[in-house]
Length: 257
Image 1 (tube, one colour):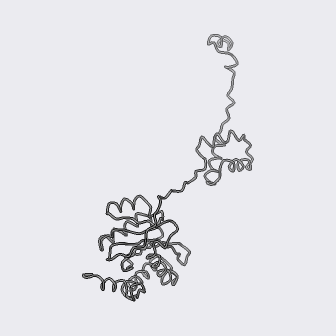
Image 2: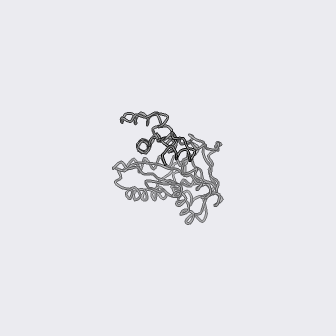
Image 3: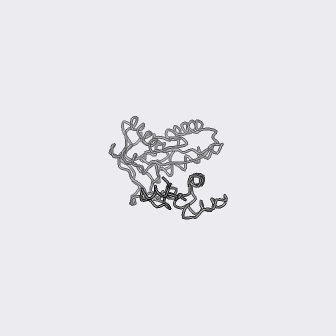
């Protein structure tokens, strides 16, 4: 049977039978576009389009944009997390140890230039430094680990004063505080004076340790910090405590301390 007779039998036009699809193969263009998008994560569509053209690939921008959208290559923008309104609160002076703590982070670098952070905890009553955790990274889970360690040796306070750092506004810390019946007192954004006790401590720690030594590794930082902490709590006179050290102040004001 001829093609004409076959088309008639199938009720198919011969033009449809002879038609060859002109759909272009986008595989090569798609691979090229994906590679550029991975390499240049901050580039949007038009920047990638110009890079494609610079490589000698001529294509219609509508065709390229269709590939761009189909592969979900659009530039993702991170939205800032909105903080709840923080109300100004007066800086309380606790009347006994373990009533209120203050926590904060600091950062510095080793001789090699590698950055590290410290997580500091003090008792607001006698300014005693309860812990300084040191590492290159201190996420919220490490913060809780330090607080849990203090819970075992000292107990927990009624409240903790803190700023709005990403580790401190995390749900992990919030849930831990609720589970332990601790109130988190957040200071207002950009108002470090509302957390003055630990800001004063941070200044002393930086002047007498972080800015005083060149550290080769984290172990040196931990060793020197540990020795300094013992001196700070046991011996070093504190002007706001009447010339007494934090431990001496606590012993003179509290029975069975």
